[in-house]
Length: 213
Image (cartoon, rainbow, N blue to C red; front, top):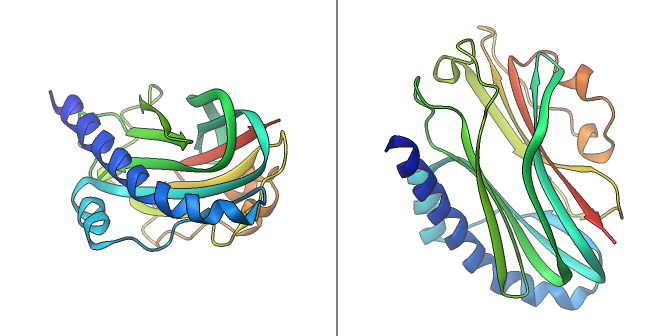
C-alpha cells in the first residue's frame, strides 16, 4: 500500500508538470533548434506539488528542428563509482518532432522498508508516456535516510547530440560526515569519467538520455 501511494503521488506530480510545461515548450518550438534545457522556475501550483510530493523533480523542455524516431531516458546506479545497474528507464518509439518535455520525479522521503522509487515521463505532440521504477539492486547498506543527498541537472541549454548518450541530471548519497559535494559540471559536457566523478558517493543515480534519428 505504501508503495502504491508513492507511485500515485509521483504520477500526479509528473502529469501536472507535463501539462503546465507543454504550453511553454510549444511557444519555444518556433526556435527550430535541436536543444534541451532544464526548467528552473515553476508556478505557485507547481511549487506546492514539488515541496509536498517529491524530494527531487527535474523537468526538461526540448525543441526539435529534426524528426527523431526514438527517445530513451534511463537511470544508471553507481556504488562508490562502480556501475551496478543501467537497465531501468523508458524508451519511446514514435515520431518525435517540434517540442516536448521530459520529467524525472522521486518521492520526498525514502523509508527504511521501501526501495528507492522514481518515475520518468516523456511528452510530445499531445502524447505522454510514463514508467514507474524501483531500485531492484537496493541492499540493507543503502540507508538513504541516514545519508546526505545532493542533486543537480543541466544548468544551461544544450544542443542535443544525435544518437549519443548525454547527462540530464543526477542524485548522489553519501554517508561521509564531512559533507557531500556536487558532481562536476564537466560531466554534463562530456561523459566517460563517471567512475572517477562518482567514487566519493555511497550511491549515485545518473539520469541519461539519447535521441535517435
